[in-house]
Structures are given as C-alpha cells and as structure tokens.
Image (cartoon, rainbow, N blue to C red):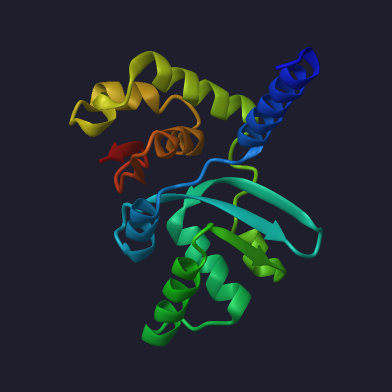
Length: 179
C-alpha cells in the first residue's frame, strides 16, 4: 500500500469519526415508550429533537414527557379526551427518531428549549462520570439531593445518555433514575 493510499484511508477514518461525533444522542425506544405511556405525577424525561418550522431551527434536548405531550396536543388541535390522548401517543411513538416538527406558537411555548445550557449538560455528564449512576437507582436521597444541585433537566439528559430512564419525583421535583 502506497503512502497516498494510507493517507486516504486515514482521512476517511477521520471523516467517519467526525460524522459519528456529530450525531446527537438518542433515547432508546423502550424508555421513550415508557415515558410516553406514563401518566404518573412523577413524569419521565424524554430526549427529543424539536424542529421549529416557523424559525427553521432545531433543538435536541431533554424535557418532561408531559410537556412534549402537551405540545403535540396544541400542535394538532387535539382534545384532552380518550381519543386525543390516543392520537398524541400514536404521533409520539410513530417517530422512531424522536424528531418532531412544530409551528403552532402555543405548542412551541410548551417546549422548554432554554431549560439548560451546554455548560449545565457538561457539568451533569462530568458528575455522572465521576460518581456513576448507582446512587440514582437507590433510595439514598442524600446523594440524589446532592446531584440535584445541578440543573435537573441537564442531569436527566445525562442519565438518559447512559441508557437509563430519568424521572422527576412527585415530591420536590428531584431528578432520579430507573433501570
């Protein structure tokens, strides 16, 4: 193999690596489905990509599933009856890539795209890298409370990126994990 061939091979590997790094994380379908199906007062978080069709902008991030459900209700003019809830569920579960388009201002207002910043997410990722996630799966509320000094939605996103379900407690709103 000549020097030019080796260089071309290494360049192609670098391009593949760069493309893989640019792909946003995605929540596994089982946890996403569980979040969509839940009507608990302790909502699950979901990791989604929202496309604002009015501004031609996209955002990938985490939010409580109930807010995403509400945005779908507003976007599609669905009632909060059995039929509307069923349609919302179908819409959310049909998008296997978890990408949703919105143009209704009321729907967009229901999506907290400014709940955390990149620094918040970096801190949450670093915290879980240093401390692991086992404490979030336990009943050790002292350690869970300590983690919740971080931005709670960013913490949820870091939990989801590690393949776990993230929830908001129905008490004080702490973020915790489930397998």
